[in-house]
Amino acid sequence: MAAEDLLTMNSFLQPVADTLGVSLEVAMVILTIISIWSLVWKGFGLWKASKKDHKIWFVLMLILNTVGILEILYIYIFSKMNFKKEKKQEKVEKKK
Image (cartoon, rainbow, N blue to C red; front, side):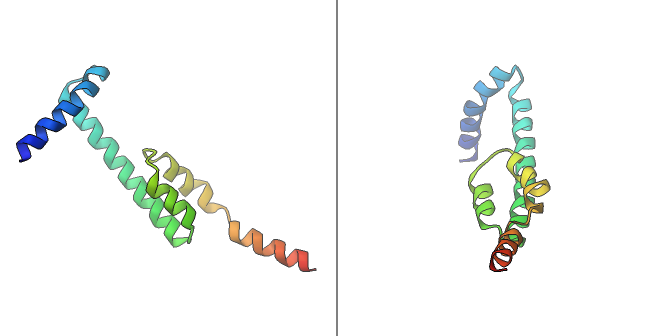
């Protein structure tokens, strides 16, 4: 069964390798590096979103695959914004 899976993978990656002008082995290495990169950033982003109780961001990062771009933006920009505190302060100011 493993040999059949490898042949299927080779037939899938061969056009990609040909388009990039690299060998099949190099295409597999590039795909592996991109997969690991994306997995690491997705893990950090999902962990941070769950710790901050940002459910919408968690679902977006879980569904969308942006090779780590969305996760990096969330970690360094959007997670630092305090959406809940701003809403609470506005309610307090409106009551006064």
